[in-house]
Every structure is written in structure tokens, then in C-alpha cells.
Image (cartoon, rainbow over all chains, first blue to last red; front, side):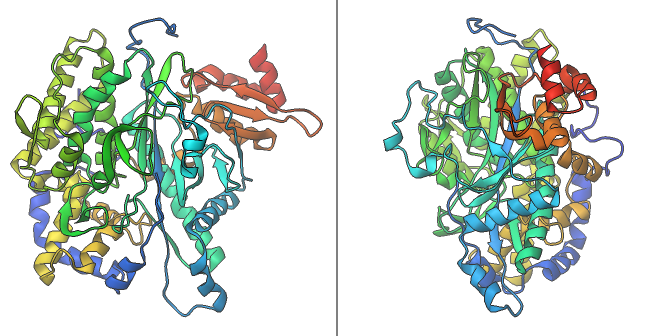
Length: 58
Length: 519
């Protein structure tokens, strides 16, 4: 039985858990994150989203 | 091995599972294009997908593998009849050799073109964690493949781990669970449906747009929910059923059936993927035990599936046939309680992963009840919604803003250079379950505890002598003068490293291997 509060199956060599408390503390730098994501996001959202047309699948 | 007449499945036999992912595919524009590069826009996505799969074959120096269709029966129905071939849609005839690229990989997986998408099917595994690991290995293979194909074509091919284009098309992320044949299929339908209908609160990937073609602006829990139109059926591409009845066990049909679960969203979050597979396997163990006295029965499962997905506040309730109204969280809790009761009563130890899954599942349900934002480190829909809400706030966007649809799409881009999910992981905002080195190992190495080990080793060691393979067979041609030898592998738990590892150590070629197997 795992003793971890969140029951993950992580191993010792993995990055530490992001607990809910820590996740909330981080909300302060969300705007930094958005800025960073803005630099990765396709610049012409409308055209890009329009071009994403898939044929059906299963 | 259990005999066909045995009523109770062997509780000690590991659950054999596997995942299939159809990737969304896009040929990106951008930059000045030559006339030739421009003409690539006319390429059918089937051929674009083919280019991706072929590029991977070249990358790993592997020629396309034949696929042995002998035991495939996509028209056989779990309800006990077979659809006449003339009544079937061409799309259902997936056992007809299409001429498109197919690779059986050294990790035991299959990489191929299905319909108009590149698809990766994991090797058979026996734990949810391994399912996540070999699924991630598939993403890694696809990233390499798409980069290599982009290089060849001179234009960028992008692959997405999502399930809809928001314009009416949907493609699948399927789960497969091997069940004992003695479990009545009607019981699977009754007892598994409420779980599948309500699990979007936990494992939905989140979607901008409501309705198959995003007729309504807004955010919902699931990519896939709106594409389900019936409760039980054989189809996977039209009139999709919550419980798919395809009866193609890829194993001994007298003892096994494969439940082909088609409702799920492709998970980007490793934790969500782990919960998706792990909780489903736990519920199926409960269903197989046949000891659930009072499973909930939904009045209208299809409608319930849509209603639960459409309410990210998680307050929507759906009606049961006894008049009660329960929320998606209530339903998940009810199923979890039944699983817990079953495991407590069971005589055998359910294993460490089952205990971790119960804890993780309960924690997620508790956190969702308190404040869904608590799950932003584990669940895709919560992480995605959080990003979208911050964009809405900062930029004053309405739900029909193209930028929000773009965030939804780019969250699922599998290339870490562009993926918003990968950006969240890199910043420590979302948990990982598996390490990069492990994923890279799994890209080329099979699980050791299923027949995938045999298949993978054959491809690694003797690919030149393998004419074709399938989930339950390998066909060899030892040299050009000799005829083919088909080796059936009906038991997914034979052909493991423990069973045949030593034979591979001793065999210098496939002929010696077959001789050793026969002796």
C-alpha cells in the first residue's frame, strides 16, 4: 500500500509531486506561463484552427 | 490454464490490456513554398499518414512487416452473430490488406495507417503503469516519425493526441481488456456502462466546443462524448456505441473475449492515462466476479454521457431507473465503493497497483468535490480548463474565440517543442509517472511479461525471416526456398521472457528458434 497521500506510483528518481497546495501557490506565475505559451502558440489562431480538418476515424 | 468450461475466471491470472491511439494529423503551412510543396495540400491524409509510418520504418531501418489477418474477425459480434459482409461498410472491412504501411516494432507494438490517421497500438501489458509507459513510447516514436517525414516532404507534419477536429470528425483512442469468456456479455453491458458514462469527470481530456461540430460555444469535459449515439453495437466509425461488441479476442476464443472500449479520450496526462486504464481494469474485475448486488442502471445512458460531459461544474445529475438522480462524481464514487468492497472480500492479494489506484482514484474524486482546480496537476480537462480560463480572463475572450480552440488543439500536439501539455509538465505543474529514459527504452523494447516479448524479440533478432505477424501469430520464412511457417500464439501470457528468453539466447536464427520451441 502506498503511503503517499495522492497514491501515485512514482519512483524515487522521478520529479517530486506537485501537491494541490503547491499548485495553488503557483497561480501567481500563471501570467508568466501564458506569456511563455504565447510565444509557442501558432500566431494566426483563426487560420490554423480552420486548417485542422480531419477525416473520420474509429 | 483455465478450461473452457470453468465457470470462474482464474483470479490470479494477470489482466492483459493494450491501448490504440489514432493521431490527428496536419500538414502545416507557413513560409514560402515551392510549387511541389504546395501540391502536398492535395495529398489525402491517408497518404500523409503513410509517409509518417514509412519514415519511422526508415528511421529504425526496418522494412514494412506483413500483417497476418487469419484470425481477425472485425464483423463478429459479442452478442453471438456475424454481420454479413455485404451489409458492412467498407470502413469496417479492416482485415482487407490496404497496401498501406504496417510495422511490427521491436517493442511488440504495431504502427500503421488506420483510415486516415497514423495509429500506434501498444504491445500487450498487464499493469496500468506499463500501459502508460508503452503508450508514451508510441508518442515518442511518432514524434521521431513526424520529424523524419517532415524532413522528407519539406513541410511540417504535426500529430495530435486528441479525438476530434471540432468540425464533426472524431477518431479513437481505444482500450482493450481481455476478459474471461464465461463472463456473460449482458453483465458487462449493464455493469460497465455507468462507469464509462461517468468517467469523463476524471479522465476527460477537455474540449472547447459542444456538439459534434461545436455547434455551441463552451467547454466540456470530454473530447469524445458527443460522438456516442447508441448504447450497444458493433460500429466504431458511425452511430458509435458506448459498449462496442466487436468480438475479436486475438486469443483463444473459447476462453477469452476482448472488450474493445472505444469511448475514451486520448490522455496527455500520464496520471490520467494511468487512472483511465487502471480504474477500468478494477471495475472489470468486479464485473467478472459477478458479486455486485446492485449496480446503478441509467435511464438514458447516451444522454447521461453527454450531460455529464457538458457540465464542468460537475453538478449535473442524471436519472437512474429507480428515480434517483446522481452526478458523475456520485456515480464514480458508487462504482469505486463497489470495487473497494469487492477487493476487501477477495481472498487473494489484489496487488500493489490496485491499492495505489484505489487511493489515487478516491483522492481525485475528493479533490474534484472540494475544488476541481486541485486536480490541475493530474487531470487533462482541469489543466486545460485552467489555461483556457486564464486566457479568457487576460484577453477577454468569449468561448468561440479561435485562440481558445487553438489552445485546446495545441495542448495535444505530441511534439514537446509545441505541446502545451509538455510545457506544463516541464514547469512542474503536472505529474509524471514514467521517466524519459524508461520511455526511450520502451520505444524499442517489449514488455517482458506477455507474448509481446516473443513478437518484439523476433523483430529485433530475426526480422529478415519474419514475413508477417499479428497479435496472435508470427509467420516465418526461414529462407527463400522454403515455405512459410505460421506460429500461432493464442495465449497472451505465453512467450514471455521467463518462458522463452533462454531459447532466444541459444538460437542463432529463426530456424534454430523454431527447432528449440518444437523440442
